[in-house]
Length: 342
Image 1: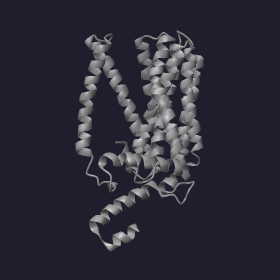
Image 2: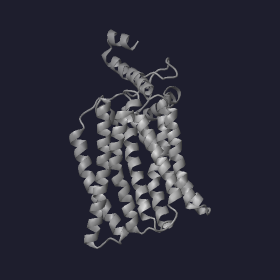
Image 3: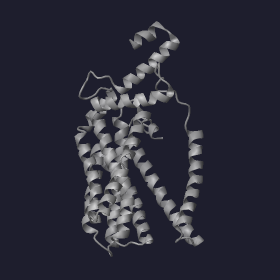
Image 4: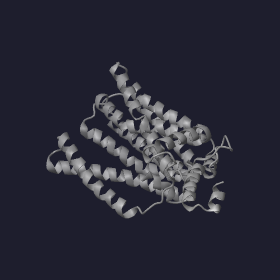
């Protein structure tokens, strides 16, 4: 579905509006589902039965998503022509791997801003998505929260994503998506450090909820800005492939913050150090975003398909167009078509 995002509009202001709306809807429905589950489990008398709660939640999720995705896939998505043809000598099973390898080399050599953006996504998403798991462990073992207090903390964080998306929209319109992302990641870095310093023991529920709310604001802000960036700095015609890169980078390091936290904890290191280590991942993401350089230049490089540091380099999109054109020429056999590819 992310591959369709860059095609929704060419207007940057409208793109910001769309991404902010999507983020708000995503997390608002999460909050609604969480509240609904709390109510349903209370009515059924299963609030303390974690296994039953998980089964009911998973069953409802499966039914609802099957209906929604089924309707979207069959009614909303029309027929689309292929962007690329399978190269001669390759099969559909091997062409994808070869293309990913080729694109990785091209991005590394010629698309500096895009390269560092993906680095930022890898570390930022590793921290952001690991934060909930690590935070629950910290709240339970250090602050001695019970299940209800943990649930309130998570609920507050989810609620915070909605104003975070709105703030991201405002900041992006006033500055640009890259600066908006930098501010969001700065908030996440500082707030994680504050959590390690200020949350020291039991009896700090209000302070925890405030920090959780700020985490939520930063999360909604960060996701909205990053989705705007990826739509504007990827080479045209490579939407599906490079959106796959975007999602891949967001998953590749998810295991690392939790592993570091576990190793520190198992070796008797204070958990406050462990949760502070998550902030280091946000900090690395922030540094990567600063290395990206000028945002307008990154957009120009993506639009023109020429690497900023090597104008003679062949673009990813040009390579794709050549493959499709070559395939069409083989079928057409016309002199004009051969001349265009030449």
